Length: 221
Image (cartoon, rainbow, N blue to C red; front, side):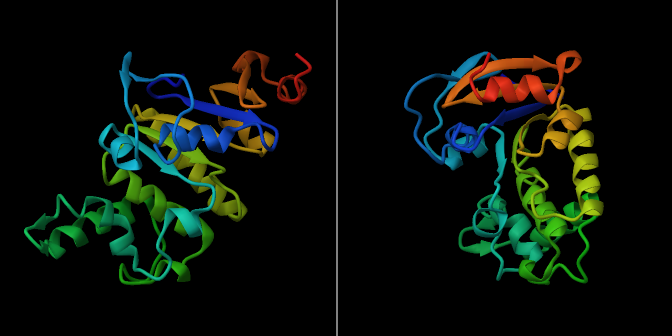
C-alpha cells in the first residue's frame, strides 16, 4: 500500500473508515478481514506493542488524549516508549532517558524552556512534535499521521510539513490521513480514497484534482 520514502495520502468523507484503518494497522482495533504485509511478508498485529516492534508508529488525530500525557514532562513523554530498553531490573537509566529526549528536542526543534516542562504548557505544534519524537525514538519505519496539522497554527504547519518531507527523504514510509484538501494534494505522492470502508480508487499525482477525489469519496466513480 505504501512504499519506502513515500507520502501516501488517505482520503474519504467522514465515516469512510480512514481512522479505523489506521488503528487496525497500529493494532489498536482488531481487523475484521484482510492481510497486513511488511516488505512482502504477512504480519500479525494484535496490539500497538506488536506494531511498534514491527516499526509502525501512529501520530493520532486526538494528540491530547491519545498521543501525549499532558501532565508529564517533555523528557518523559519522548522516552517512555523506550522504558524497557532503558531499564535494568527496576531502575531506569535517567541519564540515557535525558539524552534521548535532548536528541529529539534538538532534531525536531521542539520549543520548550526545559525538558522538564509539562507538555500541556506547550503549543499545539510543539505537542505534535513531542508525539512524533516519541514515535521516532523507537525507530519507526512506517509512520501514520492522522490529521497531522489539525489545530496547529500556520507557521507550525509548515514545520510539520518540512519534517514529514525530511522523514520521507530518509526512507520512512508515511501514510497521511487528512481532511484538508490543500494539504492532501500538496503533500501526497499518491492518494488512496476510501468510501464506506472500502478502497474507492487510487489517484496518482499527475491526476490530482479535488473533483476526482470528491467523486471517488462520494461513490460517483
